[in-house]
Image 1 (spheres, helix red, strand yellow):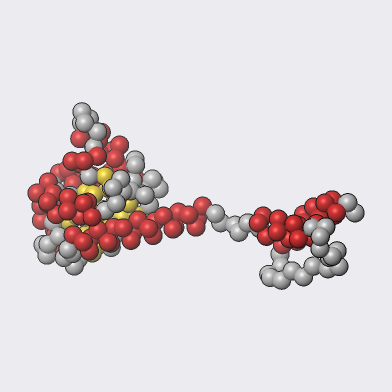
Image 2 (cartoon, rainbow, N blue to C red):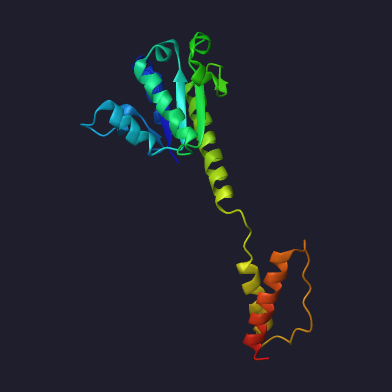
Length: 193
């Protein structure tokens, strides 16, 4: 999981301090991770292709930066196409929110001035949330392979008395019926009956 840190070069000191508090390899920061020799726009696109979270550091400086606006528009395009999972905006000063573009205001914005430590914790927490969301949506069904294997091992264990019955509890549905049929077939074959 990686975050793209979008900011004005005038806010680089704050953002670099935040980056120093993040796990190594968990962020894209222009001065550290952009490929040398690439034109800035190419480097930005390549960096955005490697991230899961777009973090915009809003300040009076960043709302007037053409590069930050370019990064924001690209980031929004990546979010809309599902290539980036989440957007996070952090205000660095009191003026930033009122001057921010409507594109940035479309998302929730942290308007409280944060210390670099707090900003880093917020970013790490958001990355963890993105990872958990990705993992939970990746496996929409609960597997029963381990439970069925354990049941089969206990029933076919010749050192145990033969099972006379099996009690299974839980919600009933087609998946449970199929699991029961599969395990019954496997157990019958394993016992030779």
